[in-house]
Length: 209
Image (cartoon, rainbow, N blue to C red; front, side):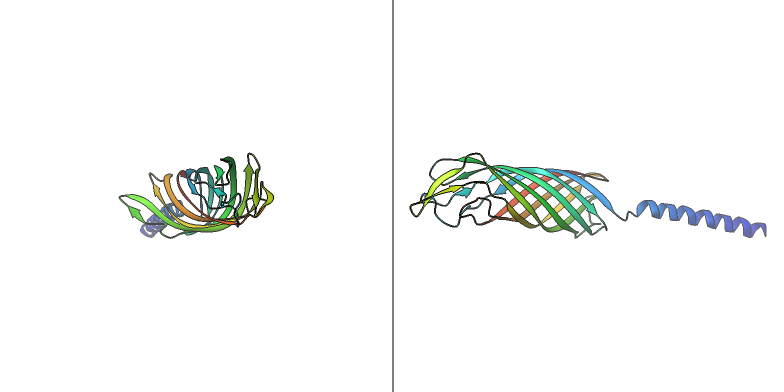
């Protein structure tokens, strides 16, 4: 009887320890924050010639932050906000500043949540989503279209993006993220505007908790 009691007690203790260990290892969700910087590649802004050329949103540096909530190891939502201090060129009057602010809500698919590379986690992922963009032109652009006067000024519109990336974990919490995305921007100027097909490449430092 005593032996059975001791055996049962040890089994209960062992089961409890195993359950506690499994509970500590299993995380139903995770979150991370990132600060990123990179380059945004521009496109022409209008559907027609202005002063004999197509005004263009120039290539520019971009920077911002991202917050990700992974509700499973493979799926999550990401909110990001960024800013690009670009310029408008190719309109005959030099350059004018063109600040671009974006805010996006994306779906994240972590393709390899448990992959290990050289002893560290390597999480590759795909991302797709949309949001809104705000343009801020330093000085309105005056010009002519087919001899008629026109004005390019601020315009806001929807934005969509899709891309791929990889997070390489330095330790259990900190990681480096390399990311490349196609971005569509709708009608950023007020006259004769068109949808822009752009791209962004960024590198970020992140912390998971």
